[in-house]
Image 1 (tube, rainbow, N blue to C red):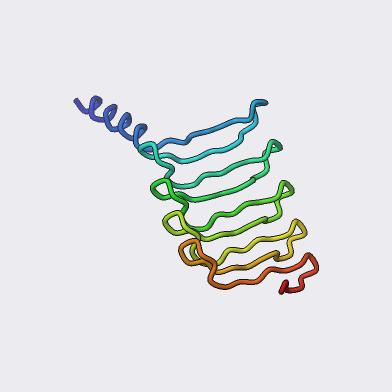
Image 2 (cartoon, rainbow, N blue to C red):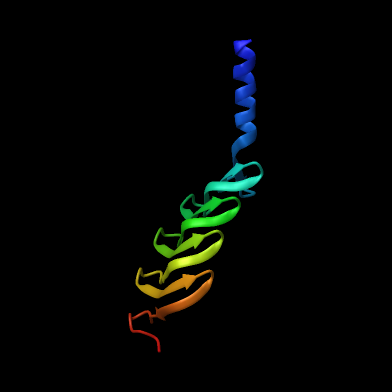
Length: 126
């Protein structure tokens, strides 16, 4: 009886949470996403063919949540954005490949309420 309960519990857990892995046609890891009850839930990561991290995004009930980051192929931070319930909320920063700040905007429910863009030289765009 005890073995039956353990097997049942393990099978229910595997239905509840899993990692969905996708590969490029050449076999390299393309993405890994945590899924619960067919919805994205938790960390999702994407990769370039060389294995370097392309993005990392958190999901809650299949909607982006918390901080999402994306990277250039050399590992330099490309963007950092804050989400709540699938909508941009909070500070969103984008960067040039050089690492210099490209833009910084504050969002409320996907609508930019303030912000600034910058040239590659770091000057504010009017």
